[in-house]
Each structure stands twice: as structure tokens, then as C-alpha cells.
Length: 272
Image 1 (cartoon, rainbow, N blue to C red):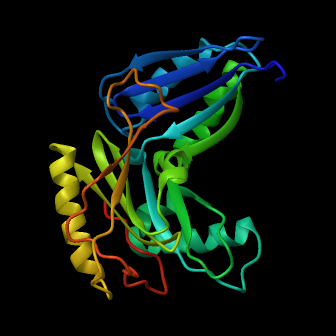
Image 2 (cartoon, one colour):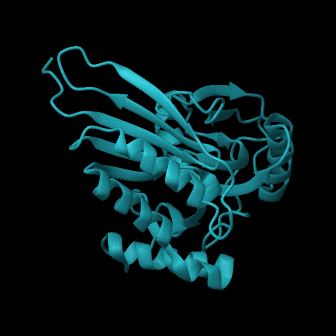
């Protein structure tokens, strides 16, 4: 194995603060995890306080290090957007996603920046929207610190990619964080349904209620058993390794195989 010649970092950017994981270059790279907690933002955008913590974290990185920033779903919005044969390329699909977010969320979506995950032709695409000012601020902090920003990624996709190798082709999948739940349904390996909500209490009880509600909403077509639910849990502790969310299977009462999520021709709403 060739030695790693660049320091590599990943960050979980969340309301309670920032967790930094740094893997130093060399023949024996070792990971070090450091927490940078913050208080509540004094006013305005809720991401201002963790942004200051991100600046503190990135100033500790060696110049030239690469860094991946995973942004909490507390600061993100999601939607499923339909496939269109008339659209070619990333920019065109982002325009469609922006239109979907404006349809769902109204004028506030005007100041969001959208990214769309690739998917095979004919499949819905998972789209994420962030406040454009937040995305610009993250890029500015990295640039000032002399850090190469490898990616800005929402925790839903980060968690899904961590769990992907364990998931069956059809299941529920939830990204669990302090204060936020995002729940998706996969049918035949494809995203079919999506929902999100704030979580003020214990996440397990909130997720059980959410599963029951969403199962009723999609009106499963083939009552041949229950679908499992897998979770990726971030922020179990603020100093937990951000690259290793807790991945495990939980019971999913009422979820049935064959559910097609009542797929719409437009975007699926992810409620705040």
C-alpha cells in the first residue's frame, strides 16, 4: 500500500458544534477526532455559531489538507425529483430540483442552492437544498484556512453511503440526528418516498410514530410482510467519529413490502 501524502479530514457540521476527524499523512496514518462545541446562534441564521466552530477546526488543519464537510439535516432540505428525458446534465437537473423546492417551500427556497444525486435513467433523483449563504461560507472558511474542500455533503447521503453495503434492496432508511429525523423508502434499490421532521424528544419513539404514519400514507399495495428499517445515527456524542455513524437495523412496525410510496410525478415533500 502506498503511503498517504496528504492530510485528510472530515467534519460533521451540526447545531451543537463541529466534530473534526483528521487522518495524518505518512506510512502509519492515524485518525484523531476532536470536538468543537458551540452555543446557540445569537440571532439570524442558526448556522452562524457552528460556522465559527468550523473556522476554529479548520485553522487547526495543516495547510493543503483535504476536507469533506457533512452538513446536518437540521440545515438541509430534501426532495425526490422526477426523471425527465428532456433534461441533460447536472445543471439542468439542478434547475428542476430548484423548481421543486420552490413549489414545496415557497419563497424561502429562492435563496437555496441545490444539488442532485445521480440516478439511472427513469428513476427519481434525491435532491438536497442548503442555504446558499451557508454553502458559500463553508467554502470561504476552507479557502481562508488553506484547506482543499473535497465535498459538502448532507448527512442523509453520508449515512446512506455508510450503510449501503448492508441494506436490502427494499427497506426503510432513516438518518437520525439530535433534533432531526429523515426517513426514506427504498423499493427495488430505488428511492420511492421521503419525509423529514423535527425531533424534540426521544428519537426512537419519534421514529416509530413516523414509520407508522408514513406507512399509512403510502398505502402499501402488497401486504406480504413488513419491511425492515435501518438507521444511520449521527451525533450520539459530539466527539463521535463523524465517518462512522452508528448503523443498525431496527423494527419497522406496519411497513410492508411492495410499497411504491404513492410515487408522484413531482417532488415528494420533506416536511420541516
